[in-house]
Image (cartoon, rainbow, N blue to C red; front, side, top):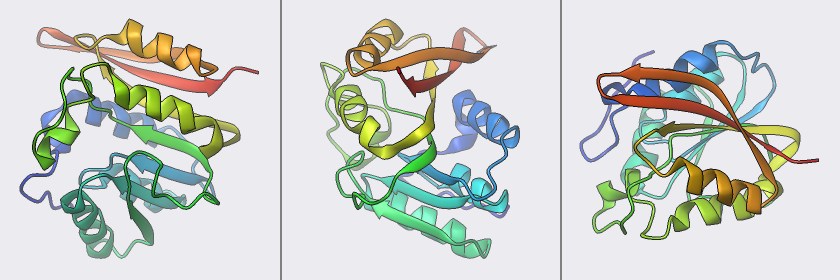
Length: 191
């Protein structure tokens, strides 16, 4: 893929969690699956999902990231629908997904500038409360969310929030790079 990362947009090559998500994406059969990259940044994962046969969507709260995802889809002649949205709020309600990938923000503070949205989840982790509150309305019955987390974030709090909203939290991969341990987590509705 030909990928451009615009200034002010989260760069996927700088973080092991982005690579972990892309590597995991390669293992999935995405043909005719509705795939959403939530908080898409450059849209790399959504573009790759479309290349693998998915019906692709990308969303981000920032206009620069939405512009970047569209640019990368166009550069690679991919059909990708992009929504500027605060988590799920501006995504039309008729859209439900088989799989959602997210590399979420996890720093305990409020964003002050547009580029801070990639890292800051609110002082009380409000991002995760909103994510899990609305997730059941956005996943298809057998749908799953795959999330990348670093050990340095409050994984216990995030898992407790997921469980409060009726979701299981299953670690599917772990990778250590330098002093940081990173995880891929599969989130599914508890039946």
